[in-house]
Amino acid sequence: MWITVTIICASLIAVIFKYVFSTGGPNPFEIDTREPLKPRVTVKKEKNKVLKQGFLASKIPENLDAIVIGSGIGGLGVAVLLAKVGKRVLVLEQHDRAGGCCHTFTEKGFEFDVGIHYIGDLLEHKPFRCMLDQLTNGQLQWQPLDNPFDHVVIGPPENRRTYPIYSGRNHFPDELKKFFPGEEAAIDEYMRLVKKTGRGVWFLALLKLVPLPLAKFLVYTGLANYLSSFFRMASRSLTDVVNELTENKDLRAVFSYCFGTYGNMPKDASFSMHSLLICHYMTGAWYPIGGASEIAYHMIPIIEKAGGAVLVRATVNRILFNSKKEAVGVSVIKGQEEIHVHAPIVISDAGIFNTYNKLLPKELQAMPAIKKQLGMLKHGEGGLSVFLGLNGTKEELGLKADNYYIFSENNVDELFETYMKGEREKSAISMPLLFAASPSAKDPTCVERSPGKSTLSLVSFAKYEWFEEWKDDKVKNRSAAYQELKQIFCDSILEVVMSVFPKITRDKVELIELGTPITNAHYIASPKGEIYGADHGTTRFSPECNATLRPQTPLKNLYLTGQDVFLCGFAGALAGALSCGSAILHRNLHLDAIAMAKKMKSINTKKLE
Ligand SMILES: Cc1cc2nc3c(=O)[nH]c(=O)nc-3n(C[C@H](O)[C@H](O)[C@H](O)COP(=O)(O)OP(=O)(O)OC[C@H]3O[C@@H](n4cnc5c(N)ncnc54)[C@H](O)[C@@H]3O)c2cc1C
Ligand SMILES: *[C@@H]1O[C@H](CO)[C@@H](O)[C@H](O)[C@H]1NC(C)=O
Ligand SMILES: *[C@@H]1O[C@H](CO)[C@@H](O)[C@H](O)[C@H]1NC(C)=O
Ligand SMILES: CC(=O)N[C@H]1CO[C@H](CO)[C@@H](O)[C@@H]1O
Image (cartoon, rainbow, N blue to C red):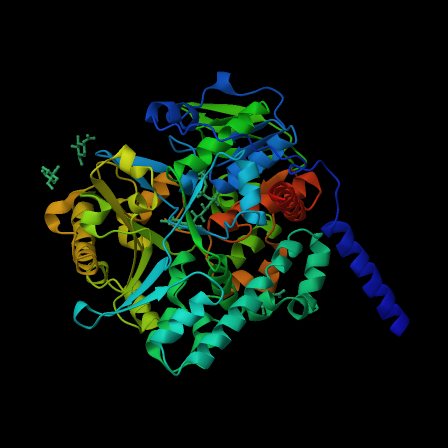
């Protein structure tokens, strides 16, 4: 008996090793490709030459190695990884500019990003930073936020409590303790749990790397739970864990404050997902200098240099398959015409729902394996974004390089549930959560680009169904009723903004734009206006989902990348790209990125000596 067990264990370990340390294909992080910093291009026309290359049949490179559907960070990320090993990749984007959630737009002279407010884990010489440096040839620069980088604001104006969130392993809990005397033990225990759980995420990457039968074995035998704290805590809700730690309602809210960054109210959120976010920002928070569009702007040339292209206004309407159910290319709608583009590999960054429900032929949609995967996932909550253009400098308006999570009270679960389930007109005037941040105050180059002006972005959630009836109206010309509903949201949001930022008065507001779930559906093609793709609640980490949601699909030569493969957020979607690249190149790119970081660090230490 023991001999059998030992043999099984030994072969298991051998197989895991084979996949974890496999170095089959070429390594995109083999050589350091950073170039000396070039002067920043700020002229919009020049940037658009890169970001807005319209689709034309004549621009399709020949002999493609792969096609990527969607130009979010998940799509561009895997395209750059493949380009770095000489592959010719075509990225196709339905919007009129590249970037997905990382795109920016300009309205009345104000520039706004859509989906990048702050990114963590960017300390120099750490793997994530090194990887991004390589993916942008060292041209993308990062500006740290202030410390405290987040503020949790709870309660109505007459009884408002504000708690600062600092980065730094000790700084964060030490500062919290000053606000919650007597709660030291709860805070320490919270930190211990968060760190332990967050550290276990390597196992999620491993599950997506090893062959499916092995992943299933690890999950169903409970070995995954045994080996990784991330998995052990994944099925526990944030509310559950936090309520065990303290009776203090404000502290409970502070412990759960950033659930807006993955979109599940604390009682539905997975404690593991939350821990990951807290860990992500523990070493600090950063913003891309020059705005979010710099990300795609510095990645596209690398794809082009290898013979590939990134083309926009290129809506893929279906994926092409041969009779053996192997993906062989895509079809792009151009006017009334369908243009077919062929490649041996098709990668989708369009999200799992779009890919399976919209881009597969009916008979493949009906495949049990496809239906099963879709059945495990839910659409995430719809997003609501407000873009404010303000007359005044950051000093005049009291804006800083930080973020605000504004809660109407500390019973977060209750308020959020009432809001999401409520009637839309009622919910519009009782928003439980608003995220607020000033992109212009975070970006030091904004002063040059629009002197005397500032921007403030706000994010919250909304039901897709509240707006669904107008989804087929023309985007810039929806009905008056839609505008009226938007106005109710805008007015109530503006009230909150003016109370939290007293220097912002009505006369300072030059522009107010509200994006609803149907806006998201248009610009980033999220089917239900989701803010973060598929739902991240505890079921996302169900054993079945844990094991089978991976870059490989049930269809040969069709791969998934981006936030639905790994987790949401810039870093999560990029991890999806790394997992996808690993599957295609047959090597562990996570480890390659870590090895590159080690090399960079040692080179730098030598230089200093
Ligand atoms: C309001 C908001 C705020 C956020 N704030 C932060 C933050 O502060 N920090 C952070 O880390 N993350 C943040 N995120 C999350 C982060 O931006 C996303 O998780 C991540 O960028 C998703 O990348 P992706 O590549 O998976 O998907 P996306 O960026 O959504 O890219 C998918 C692309 O596919 C295209 N597409 C879809 N269908 C087709 C088709 N048929 N043909 C062609 N193209 C198609 C879409 O147009 C889109 O460009 C935020 C997101 C939002 C919406
Ligand atoms: C902006 O404010 C300044 C004074 O602070 C004023 O002179 C100017 O007219 C304002 N601009 C707009 C567009 O409101
Ligand atoms: C906007 O829609 C209305 C009808 O709802 C129509 O009369 C009008 O011409 C449209 N305007 C534009 C610019 O499309
Ligand atoms: C490996 C594994 O099974 N991890 C988690 C997957 O999801 C369930 C909850 O739905 C957890 O219990 C597991 O720990």
